[in-house]
Length: 468
Image 1 (cartoon, rainbow, N blue to C red):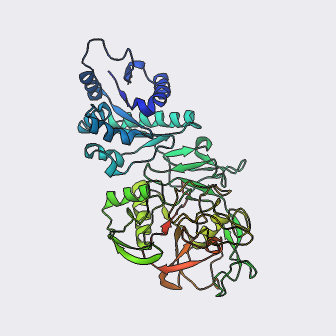
Image 2: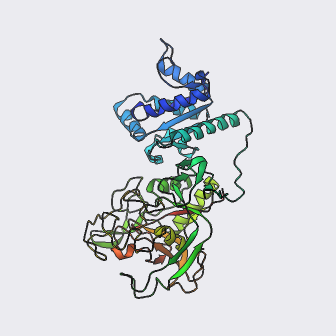
Image 3: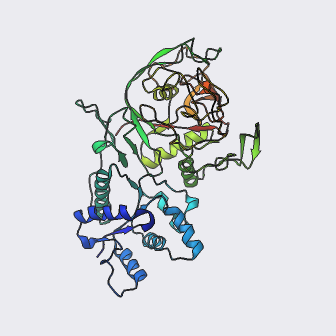
């Protein structure tokens, strides 16, 4: 009797399914792992009926999700072709059989609106991801999860991870153990702070990817002679800030797909109007919202049109969903992770071009030349990551921070914490945007607006305190 059922599309997951089947059958009896390959279906049996019988008999279904998995639903429905992948998932859900989504490579998490209504509950289920570069470690983690799920279903208890104590640091190599659902690149979930170009993690299939940044010191603000420094003193006085413990920061700004999942899961209210820049004019426009900001976006673009309250509501939802402490970055943390150990206006140096960031290329900075003005956001993975693995800390979207607005740094905390006081009706934004001039993209530049503003150039990036 099949205990584990592999559900997959041959068009985008056959090779992945073959590799996973090999690993599963090395751990479980071959007869306890069902995959629709030659020899597994008796000759002369009605194929659909046999598949359904195997779904009914399984203890757990693994749904392999590749890049074209979503589009196949629409294509098969339009052509009238039977969709056994859909039928198998529906059958498992209807029978209340545990179903685990397994995302393959860089396959995106779909929006609920992209799925047939009958299988949208998949998006609320604990998932995992397999990567080619870390397949063996990922497959082992998946198999361990399969064992635990089956034990739970059968009423057995198992010892989960202890998340009560702070993450331990290994004195020999400086690595930190981070408890996470999905780990990329870090051996046994032990992360080297600052190695975010090759190591990151996720706590939930709908959560952003996070990198571990190191403790350390940096000088916050800009020197008086930095090109583009405003005359109002907002970037001074320069002061030393000490970040005492490693923490996690978003590899990317929160994406449209991630934010949409939050809205659909919670019913969080988002108005159907937004202050947008279109046709060379700023205006509040009806019918504009985070799903339709005035330019085309995919699930992998940064969400825009969110105010500070929307961003903090997302943090609260993700914290409750994952059991992990998610929040916005403090302003000091934001500049710290933006600079990533550098002291120049941009992490790569003193000049900027539109080959390095998304901004209004009609304007220049330093010795840079004019470039492209794209008039929209770009996908979050565009351009090169900074030394700690964070993408697009300069340009694309302004990013909300947790701090109240302050006119300068007099009296600012020296430990990187959130700065209270000041003007509580204003919150800080950092990083510049697709419409911005290049001096606004500098690491030191500070912006602040009222918390209720929703513009089609404002987004946010997450932080997570590392406790496990």
